[in-house]
Amino acid sequence: MTAAASSSTVPPETLEQLLLQMCRIRSFETRAGALFDEGLIHGPVHSYAGMEAIAVGVCSSLGPDDLITSSHRGHGHCLAKGLDPARMMAEILGRVDGYCRGHGGSMHITAIDSGMLGADAIVAGSSAIAVGAAHGLRLQGRDAVTVCFFGDGAANQGILHEAFNLAAVLDAAVVFVCENNQWAISTPIASVVRVDDIAVRAAGYGFPGVPVDGNDVLAVRDAAGEAVERARSGAGPTLIEAKSYRIEPHSAARKTDLRSPAELDEWRARDPILRFTRYLVDEAGLAPSRVEELEAQAGREIDDAVEAALASPKPTPGDELEHVYAPAAYRAILMDGTGQVGAVAWPWTTLKPADFSFPADPNAFQLGTKTISQADVDALALGALPGGFQGMVVTGPDSKVYALALRPLLPDETE
Ligand SMILES: Cc1ncc(C[n+]2csc(CCOP(=O)(O)OP(=O)(O)O)c2C)c(N)n1
Ligand SMILES: [Mg+2]
Image (tube, rainbow, N blue to C red; front, side):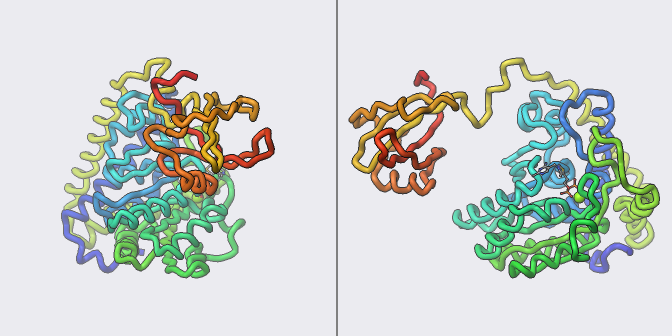
């Protein structure tokens, strides 16, 4: 198949940018694989090589305020969204200049300022996050769109179906992008799905499902453009199923590959970068020398990124508890409807009903700067207390029902 017919409307600078972006991803993945083989990367690396047209086609339809969520195979999504390859590589190498100070690694690259809500090692895990983000944006009166990238294996996860349904009933501004690369580690998709197109599943939730050639960057861009427009206008989600292939093994650590050499050859011949360069030269009038220049530019940029990342220091031992969300200890606060409360330190595991003495202390009603009211206690019982608190309903040693809130210890509190 050649590139999408509507490409004649894409300006030449944009065509060049699409190629450059795909080449950056390919170079990045090649270098990341080599660094892994050299033993310099201690976490996993899942190559996006062969699937570049999906991330690039989709993200070229997004604006800077739009958001994405990603999967374990997320480098391509990050680069296509405009993240800095040097900071990404530093993160993967576990260096302090990485997006998460080297604490997260490849599967946890997060760059909120760039609209990248996070890669996610939990297959399908980011689908619910994407719907929540989209709904949050709507509540804030913003018209930004959230794109959720996930794999064909993720398409059979329960949470994805809950996310689909919730997105549908909320008319959430989400574009679900199923990257069907035909395999989930060693499971061929045809052995676990009884429909030809995963896209048809969207009909069961009441929104459009669009299968697209995921190795054709312009076809992906067209499909994404429509879906993003639909989401932005308030008409709700779309599922795009981009059919593609990973041309590398599942991960850098797992060199065994059950796929047949014939199948690999067939897909290598459909390599999205190869096809697009052919299209650019044969049909869009780009000089072959310009294609070479762009490929070389991408390679140089990634070489520079790797050099900068390798020059970044490793975190100091002891830093591992800095900048993490979960604190080492909590303050547990117990409330009942009449305003009695107990408050104790809770170093995670040791909370027992006997720890509470139920003092009638009015100050104990302060959670940080917030005064707790009966309405909050009621809300807490529903698990809905705002402001980073976690809550649950517990039964006290006196057999009465209490609301229990947990919050991180404040800096001036001792355990
Ligand atoms: C909930 C969950 N189950 C299992 C795994 C282990 N696992 C990691 S990647 C993967 C395959 C995912 O396949 P797919 O969604 O098709 O993505 P691909 O690797 O092909 O890009 C599995 C099963 C996991 N990380 N999370
Ligand atoms: Mg897959």
